[in-house]
Image (tube, rainbow, N blue to C red; front, side, top):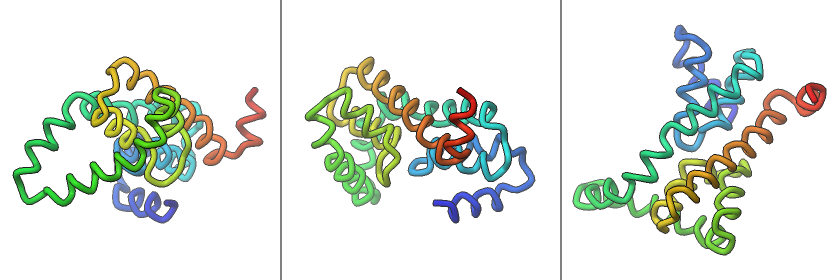
Length: 165
């Protein structure tokens, strides 16, 4: 992931560092995890980086939860059918474990930084499996908080994080 983050930073060079971090945090796959790594590479203070990354990661979530099913349905009648099917398959793979534990499963799925997990995929799973909007939002927000704690420790160093408390 580091190489991808460095490539994006290089490509977006010339714009403010905070905006680069925000843009990376908006992106699927990279999300807050990539944003915090980028912030540490760009020497942005942790306390400035965290809110930027959280807002960037949260911003797309309501749109995914509210509109993804309608968007998928509309796109299934286009040449993007294969992409839509892959996204739905990815969501179904994650859903099996999530559905066992519902809200807690979704929170952990979003919060544990593993490939293919995160707020975007968690939102997709929640929407496609008809979670209540409130439950999905709370679990995803909790997962983002958990991911923030884990990735802050990884990005800025656990000793630095512990020294603040």
